[in-house]
Image 1 (cartoon, rainbow, N blue to C red):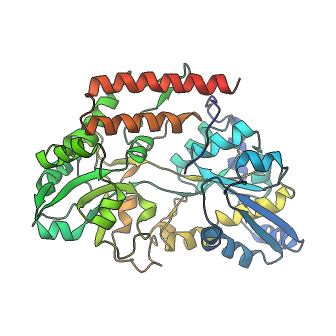
Image 2 (image 1 turned 90 degrees about the vertical axis):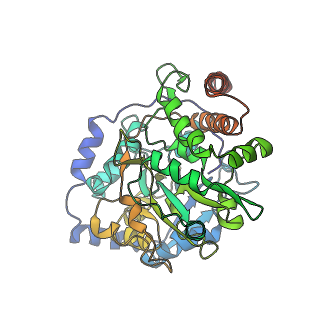
Image 3 (image 1 turned 60 degrees about the vertical axis):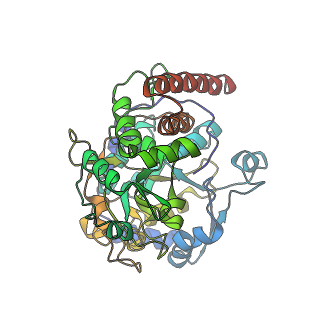
Length: 439
């Protein structure tokens, strides 16, 4: 998910033209569409994919390439891996064509708009009868907020945050397992029971991935006021509540606090999976099947704020969009249409990826094609998605600053008032630097 985000853009609400496209897309996918698809597929076409997410060729083929080659045998499906010499800037400078670009929310906009490779797919969506009403509303809302009245992409998969827990540690210390629907107060109490030194090992009751919990925060706090390009961290009182709840309250056990102050770092995925001394870990749903049997874990829904019951994290979709340099845009649209079809969405759900569709028949199959189908996969849908807030393409830099402040807070290097103020100053400076650089 690493990328270079360079340009600030204003976020605008979708205008009527997209609504018209959505209405056009509600028509049934009948035999005429299938005939048209067959006609298109008869023509030899090369469709080139590219992403800046460092996905390997093998990973692309496993997730998407193999399925597309089977569906479109007369298409040449190619993928350019983002490696040294294949950065976005280098590909564009060399005139290398890629037809479909994909990345996660925020990262997509931060690459597409500054490099001016976006292409409005509204007419293609209507022409190929892609039904936009099939998609999860908050995912579409997020897309609309950054589209300036256009349709520059379609969401294909999404993610949210879950609470992973090490069953062996709960068993070891005789503590009941977490449950779906817990509050943060209950989670903090569990953390205190599990944070201890035993047999010379320091155990941590709770930790999380700061960049993810901030980026996908369930209070839906915007990182900046987009009208003024001003950081919100020292202006919106919800940030203080957020950092107190996730960064401070669960780490009050003396041994845990001393570890944080001594090492200057917080435990993360390595401690959860490899060292196995973390009892609970908040991380993205997409890792549910990735750790295999390295740790004896399961998941429950993300804990909720007491005054916002049933509201989980914001969704974290990945967007796939046709670029303006695409050679055969109709063929590329046929590929995208298949990627958001029930058939392919079911395929990705079976292997553990969250669908962007609302169809319960698809959702209920989450993870059932994996060796770990006995895990609590439906925890991913236990909470509602938190509402999206408009984002700017400097969001990633701002989130990094906010996350670093949270770590400073946990490790005792700053207090919450000083930390919020300093993070605001750093974020404002970064926003100004980006604006100056892109004049």
